[in-house]
Length: 448
Image (cartoon, rainbow, N blue to C red; front, top):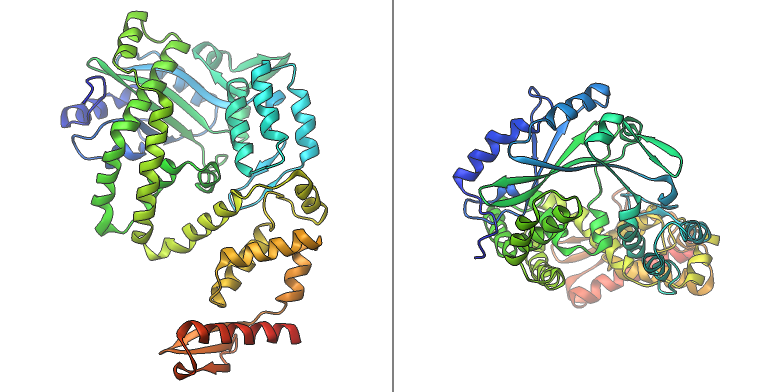
């Protein structure tokens, strides 16, 4: 094991918890201990540590932050992150329900507006993502990441004391940004003996903040974060096995965290240069190779633990996977324009959330593959330029039928509980009998 990586020991855990008073803002409010550190066993590698505290956005909050920054024993303040400069505000919205609000024309106008505000290489990368003829919703997340060094408002101690930042002649007030619901995170380096780890301390005012959606990680195709999210959904009997899988990943995520840590230390001049050089010498592996390894292992464990999810969470994760599988199908710009004309607000998909949910639920009731049903309806809508709502209402209107299995017999019922058709075991194989029931329902629709 490389010596620069921090290991969770009982001694470290005691020391870290005893040091928390240096950064917490309200002594009488509990700390929300987020992230994987808190479920890791002794002997695990520490990547970073996530914390949160419920706060009330006010001048008193800023005063408390400034007081906490005077205590510089074990924590080195990096920056407070909150807000986005208006010049780089993205002209689209991606919600947590499987939809978005995206207009390619507005996106191109925005692209033109930032041309003289970013370097040429950054502009070219954004332009490539935004004007591709094989668009995916992931492109929008990629652009957000590319533009982040320009768009993210970072606050040092003097900025917090002043209460605002001036950018292109406009003042941005920290309290106003917090009240608009921008995620507020105080970032630190925590020093333990001769090693460091990063601390993300989120300040959460429930009146303004909305929790981010894990669905976005599916769009980003961030396999590691998707796998980590399983800690909320896994069956109890498999939780220990899950934590062991996380341990396998730690040797790579720990090294990657150190690379990011050194980058921040250099960018903001947080450590003496000889200390930075020491950390660099102890870590020579590339972030690209680590990221690739993390993704490969995470995919393996996602496949394994998908069958070990609590039953009550299965529908939600199946929906995330279903929408994510749609999201990786490239869409031409022309097709996107046509979808918008037909009333689809999120043209990366053939359906908006309402129609998506309807077809998903219909597929479940009719024992159909939901991915194939969605793909079929999208193909028909795109190929014949038919409004997806009209298509659904025409083909599947007034659907009150569903299929049930009754001791091997396949039955078609309506919402009143009446049996309209029964296909018995001796009439064919199980699969054939389900198809007979499905054909009955489709014919029923066509006759309505």
